[in-house]
Every structure is written in structure tokens, then in C-alpha cells.
Image (tube, rainbow, N blue to C red; front, side, top):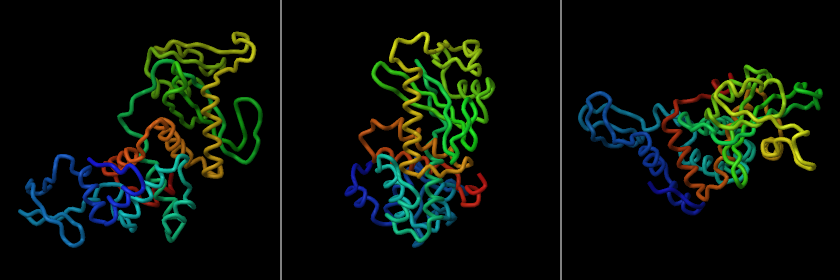
Length: 302
């Protein structure tokens, strides 16, 4: 399927609602249309863009059962919002997308960006593997917090990053309630393949990692050469994450929504070497066609 490689191509491909529906249809019905009532495989589109079975005349909306279902915004606008989101290196805030697309309310922009973030975690994604650095960091909050493994007014996030011969590979990150052995074990087993080499500091919460099928290496200052830093790669990811939250979103993110911003950052970082923004756009449209509808109330209840 053709993908837009730049802004000009995007505008040509998605000028009308019909073009957007045709594109979405390919992902909504990858094996072709099949009537849910009579199993007939031919249809015609009525003036409302609804698929009508040529045999039994039953109707089916292309957007039904997708994240685009019953949207008050035209697909043309939604597609532009997705394109703008993936085309910007550091993403875009709700205020930014509202301004660029001329949306009537901030709430609409905010809600749709949250819907898009839900599309950025793929259920079948592979776990991290190889050599992995793991550490926790505190994110957000207006107070400087206390020293140690606790910080007042901040959210604890655990981060894992693959270490390659040159640079870093993929990352995973998640909010955890505390840095206990139970919480850290759950994150590690859900996100990292067994037999991988896990590198941590000496925090007691990582004790027993080697008993779960991993090789466990502990870094501390006494084992490093002068000038070397403990867990430099995962610390760099944590620093980049905080700068991204501060720069793009002004760091004002409630804990109940933070996990979705972590998903967006993970999506962006793991695809930072991609030369095709069009491919990222297509991936989100595809995921949107498979994702169940999400309304504003359900987002606010998070």
C-alpha cells in the first residue's frame, strides 16, 4: 500500500473524506469486504460513506468498531493530526495541534492525542533481549522530593534499554508503585527475554534476578574505572525522557495519564532511526482500524 513520504504527498493522498475512508478500508477489511449477515462480498457506498451489501442491503460503517468510530471530526482532520504528530521529531502538544489544525477546543485536541497514544503499544511486540541496563527514576511533580528511593510529589518509573556494540537499541518503561523486588521482577519478566544479561546498580530490589532465568551483573563505583559512570545508557534515556516531557508538554502531566506519554516516548525512541514518517503514519492508521472505540469519558476516568 502506498504511504506518504512528505507533506506534499500526504496532502495529495488525503484531500477528501472519501480518500481517507478508502485508505482506512484497506486495514479495516484486509481480506476484503464480507457482509456480517449474509456473507456476500460485494457492496456499494451510499452518500454517507456507508457500505451497503448488494445482496441483503445491510449497512456497515467503515469506522465502526475502530478508534475513529462516531467521531465528530472528519477523517481528513484526524489523519492530519496523526501525520502532524509523527512528522514532528519531538511530537506535539494538545495546544500545538489545536493551533495548527484550527480545532475549536483544546479538549478535542487533548482527547485525540490520547487516543493516538493508545495506538503506540503493539500487543505482539517483542521483548528486549541481549544486554540490558535497568534502573528507576522519578518523573514529574513540582517538589524537589526527598533523597533516596522515594520522592515526594513525583512518579516512579522503571526503564530498561538494550546495549548494543555501538549505542543503544530499544527501550521499555513503566510506572511502578515502589522499587520493591516484586514490582521490579514483574517489569523485568514482562519486558525482557530470559537468558538476557541484566545490568543494575546494587539496589536490593534487584536481588534474585539471576534466579528468574537471567544473568545479573551489578555495577558499583568500586568496580568501575576512574571517570566511568554507573548505568550511563539508562541514565541518558531517563534524562532525554524528562527533557522531552518538559520541552514538548511543559512537564505538567498527571500521574493518571503519564503511562500514555511513556508509551509515546517509547514509540518515538524505538523508531528514531526510521527514515519514513509515512510508515509511522500508516502503522498508527492500521492500529486505529484494529482498536476498539474510545470516548472522552473513558479517557478522563483513567
